Image (cartoon, each protein chain N blue to C red):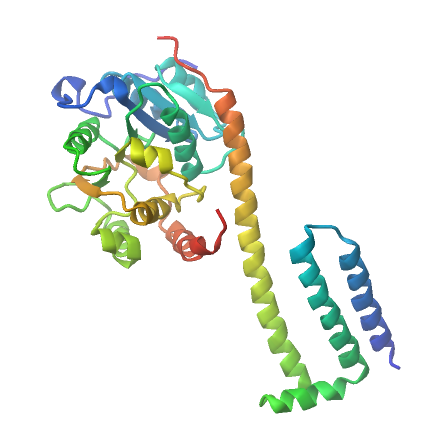
Length: 249
Length: 112
């Protein structure tokens, strides 16, 4: 299968630049499940700025892995579908054992994030006063057209979660995160599915990592909305969060 | 003795034999077996003298022994469901770690 015609999902790379971080020390982790339509563009955009992109193909049945690899990503393929949390963990394990890796980022494969926001978050991390930077679509300065009900539920989730509240976070389920070695070395996500976002926040709280939020836009394209999780999945996520503490690591 | 009593006792004892013969890690399984043995004794007793469960029910403010057993069953069911759920989650995690190890073995680096 060839490439689909190039569709720019992000602004051209010439308007983004990194100030204090060596781009070759940055590893971008892209979990992907059946994203053949868009993964090529997403990886190519990331590769225009960053040398190291690792795409974790989560047992896709389409050409996601091959397309990502041809676009210049390292590819780690789960033999079976495990879920986004497991894919992120795999990507982090892979990236943290690479020589020279010092900074890590998670970036969704469906084209909902902007390269510009990622770079801003890396600059925020480079100030050195935090261990992890998380994107938020609810900072008040962003224009993201979050569907009303989704926005309401995401905000409520952030406010109801003890960890989020304690840390003052406003967006509990943003896929854009940037973190340093400390976080990468100690990250151990056990929630394989979509409940990992809450678990991530709980780990930040438990390890007392210093965290900051950075406003980001979410591009709700038809594609990313169709691929996104249904709101009803929030029920599963809440349930997992409730039982998380009962499980042995 | 009623036929239903014979059937129920046979079922309970068969389950006991099955459980005692099944293997697993020693300590936790041992307690499960002790608990199950007590359960079997109580069950056989209740089957032979069903009216006695009503006496016990009355002690705790329930009218009929049947109702008492029903409440106990509901609680046991919820407990079993939750422990199964957690067991599954644990298995899922081990399975994920296995798959991850395999995935990392077969990682592909880009050519350019």
